[in-house]
View 1 (cartoon, rainbow, N blue to C red):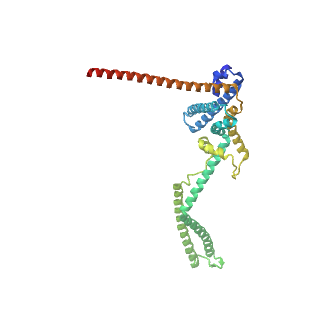
View 2: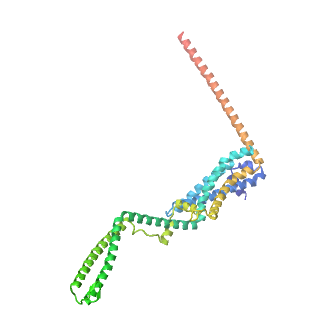
View 3: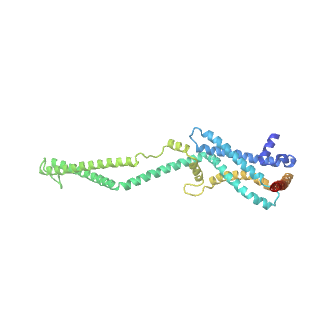
Length: 366
């Protein structure tokens, strides 16, 4: 139990030797240290999960995720520990809040960063459905775009095809009617369009000639229509219209499984909206509260430090800091004094040496 307590004291950034002297402060710093530790733990899980999706499909994805998770958690732990330990209780409440404001902003940013990957995991099923729907709509748009481009590019050929089909239909009806009239003429049926003479006579030959002419034209139209259809079919293959199909359920599942972090993050944001573009308040509140929870959890150590009254530990730390500053000032004075005396001694020694040199030179001259 003592080891756990000391570990949480270390996490809180407290001066352990000083904290030991004030038992009334022990539980407060255990709580602060535990909050910092578990925040770093959640940050490790969040960062590792995010990195796993970055390298999803790679053989070393799990190794990269574990390594990055540990590094990310350690970085968050270090920042949180510094944030809390750097807040002192010597100033007024407003001064403490002002001092802590940049640290609170940093804590909010950290909370947002570590909460997002966990939100992606919590709403994984809904994200997959949203991604599959998005991929399916995207494929629809792609096919529509290809068809529109194809129709615009080959409008003249398609117009000719339509005219030939109409002509073919008209010729087929005329041929059937002409063939019926020819039969009536041959068998001697009297109508307003037949002579009523039985046999293959002059009128029958005329109708036979008209029928053959229409059949020849039908063959020409059919051949031209077949050539145009073949040409347009090749054009569809060339433009990719024939090869582009809607995704199957299996393909959509595969695409959702390999979706990257950016796509999943986009899908998570889209969960807050209905199909008609209105806000889905239930989903929006669920996603938002998860983020708010982590932001609050990240800011909690700072809030605890701000809300807690100034205790004996804070006073002792302030006194120690004051004593250390005084010692630093005295060390400065000591170093200045030593430097001055050393310089003076060096100056006197150099002066004496130069005097002896000058005296020796004077004696030599005389």
